[in-house]
Length: 167
Image (tube, rainbow, N blue to C red):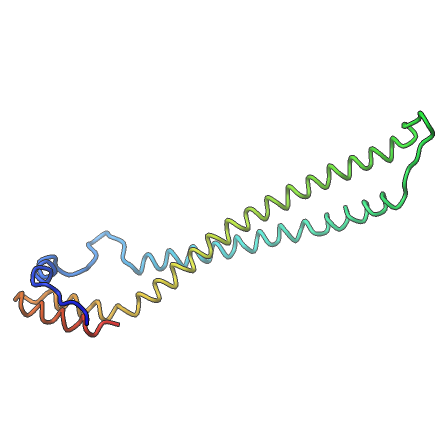
C-alpha cells in the first residue's frame, strides 16, 4: 500500500502553484530539441572520425607491405663493416618511425572515437529517460490540477487518488 499524502504536503502543493515556465525560461521541449540537435551533431562527428580511421587503413596496408618486403631480404655484412647494411638499417629505422606515427594517429582517432561514443551513449540515455518520463506527463497534469484545488482536504484527497493511479 502506498503512503497517503499528508495535508501539509497537499497545502504546499496548492500554494506552490502550477508547474509552468515563466516567460523567457526554457521549456522542456527546448531541452528535447537541444538534446536531439546534440545527438545529430554527434552522429556527424562519429561519421567524420570513421572516415579518418578509414583513411589510415591504406597507409597501414602500404606500410605492412613495405615492412614485409624489407624483412624478406636480410642484410649481412662482412666482419667489421656494419656500413655494408647502412641503407638496410636506415630503411628499418624509417619503417619503425612510420609505424610509431601510424600507431599514434590511430590512438588519437580511437581516443576521439571513445570520447564521442561515450557522449553519444550519454545523449541516448537522456533521450530514453525523457521517453520514460513522457509516460508520466498526463499523470503529472492531473496532479497539478489537484494541487490547484482551493481546499486542502480536497487537494489531499485528489492527490491520494492520483498517487494510487500513477503509472
